[in-house]
Image 1: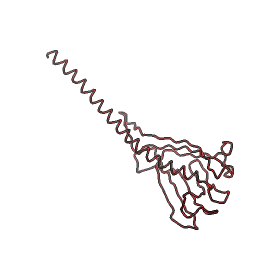
Image 2: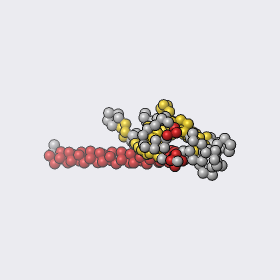
Image 3: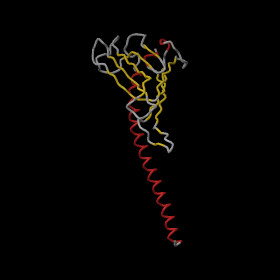
Image 4: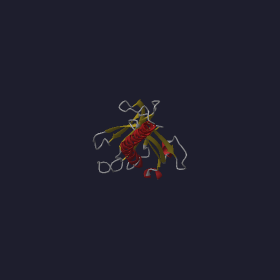
Length: 199
């Protein structure tokens, strides 16, 4: 074979491999970006609702026993959660419960997903509909802190609530040659000091 032809084949082959590798990189980057945007939007929704609920813990309840359940993955409490919902005077309050269940999510492809429920019950005096929301998260943990920032099991001593939330994409954005899947991950750590608990 002519050396020039052989060299052309080699160079052409290398160029083709480089082009294919670049196209694969661009495709994977596009998939990761799209997956990331979808995951972040879902994550922001969970954070917004969770943050609003806990900030209003004990608000307008007129009672001191505002925390009903306090566990690592389950938090139930009272508060005037929504403005202009009919409640808002002393002893008019809603009940909210966040619960990370042990049930694996079956509607996602992520084996790390568990079902997180948020149950809202309106004040029975005003009626209204209860509200059940379902999310899929990898991890949720509550820690209950006193005024000094130390963990406590006593609801009456709780002045701060520390939250760690991990949320991953429903689908993997990359699968290695060995079959290992990569999921887009968002992490949120926050310590909230509900205004009503500071008094």
